[in-house]
Length: 273
Image (cartoon, rainbow, N blue to C red):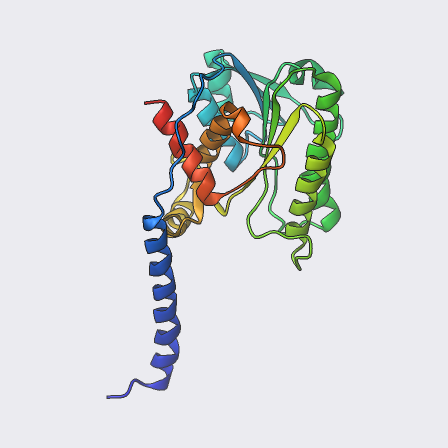
């Protein structure tokens, strides 16, 4: 018996998509690559700064840093407080500094000269933003910070961890993809031949922390996670902490895609057990 034409038109693409999806799931399950244990001890008196802790990714990074026994002090530079930031301040581990002008960091030089690593999670969706505004937020804000940080800090082994995005290229037709590449390259160039390493993280979908995610976000996460195209915000934070600890293993200009972020998050988790 022949299927009606309309049903065929619907079922064939669905079948192909299901096949593609299941293939992705199998490939992820067969990927047994792991990260070797740390060869040396970890600095137990690390001071970090988090920018963008009031957002989705930044909230997860802050959660990971607050739970990290190797992080002694966290500077949160933010325009507004959140319940997690306030809890961190109450614990004594977080120092919150309200800051409004992200093209001028003179007011926080005292804070940033103390830090060993900076976790940068400031960003907005490109929806409704013109190219100039998007570029200012995603390129000008972090690059100006790095210039000023290098001017006030004499610490060795500094690292700047920038959340970029997957599927980006300089010749992309998408404005946001071009600007993310421009941000990476500009940051890399500024830090060239200095004591600062810039590491770019290129996740696909970022799921909020489990306690902050709403139903729609959870559905998206659990749809993309089986094919290795989603990461929890907390996992990004754990990966950043692990990469920071593995100073000698990551060169300046390193980039980590979603699956690598997950592997280093797993390595961090195993190290804490």
